[in-house]
Image (cartoon, rainbow, N blue to C red; front, side, top):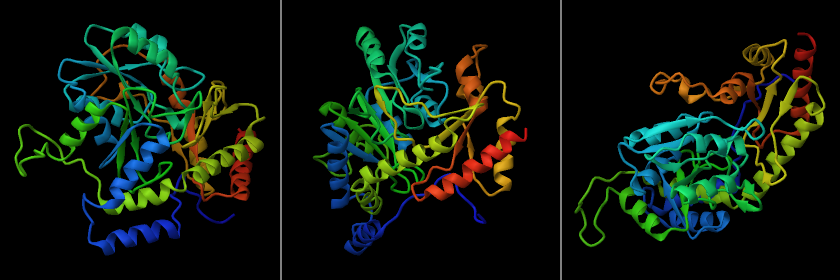
Amino acid sequence: MNKFIPASEPSITKREIDYVTDAVKSGWVSSLGHYINEFEKKFAKFVGTKYALTTSNGTTSLHLALVSLGIKRGDEIIIPDLTFIATANAVAYTGAKPVMVDIEPDTWCIDPECIRKSLTEKTKAIIPVHLYGHPADMDAINEIAKEYNLYIIEDAAEAHGAEYKVKKVGSLGTCGVFSFYGNKIITTGEGGMITTNDEKLYERAKFLRDHAMSKEKRYWHTEIGFNYRITNIQAALGLAQLERIDSIINKRRQIFEWYNEFLGSMDGIRLNPEMNWAKNVYWMVCLLLDKDSQILRDELMLKLKEVMIDTRPFFYPMSQMPMYNNSDKVNTIAYDVSKRGINLPSGVNLDRGEICYICEKIKTILKHT
């Protein structure tokens, strides 16, 4: 196979092109337009919440949710150490402290027991991340939140449509946040969403999203707000994607099954987990090398690149980053999993033959090390 296979790429059909073209022709190209309203309404229905609010991206969704809940300087927010840096940064934007705790070895998501051990009188919220498309253990996390009167902000940026005990992520806490970046389950190019059943939170976030402008007196502002709005053009793309989301998720699960067919019984590696209470949407198909592997993660990635197969490393633990590395604490599992994991090509445009080719190359490389 003599072509480059990317780690991810969006699936764009005639429906997306038609909706975006219609939005452009309508003249409503900025932050007003019926595609925004429809996208929010239908996304709330998909997730199973009363409200959904579009934002400019997943990071601003996190920040807006935190600010709308009153998170401020001096507060502490507990997050998993293994996730994309936006989770920690959004907390830092508020002046609060991101407290990074270890993950579970079985799900790669935040460990509820580590949450308990990190609670202080300053803890105000928990941000579980549904990493790589697999839900966190939300019953255990909700139990802690209820006991200590904490907010739960689900970071579902990578997990649109994933399920915890048949309920979709984004509906299991105080609110959920999603990203629609180009490589996500569905995309608006750049964009995000907050989902919630809390009307007060929804109205507060909606107010702050548009520069905190008075509803009664245009261009009158009583506090500092943000420009975190999405455009009607982006929402048109998102709505078309949302109307196809079930087929997109089914294809992602099919792609994982192909990987599992070709690699699942191979010694020395492990693919994504899926607990019996979860539905994983496999945002990225993950390969975890055994601890005693004869090949290092980066070496495997380099060899795959030589045969034009694109991969990504797992996220680095955020507590390793210079701006957050302020303690001697090491989250053992997060640090270990991070250095052994890679993301394989996972885009929904892939076919069985391409997956077979990727897996054959992986087998060849591993057998000769």
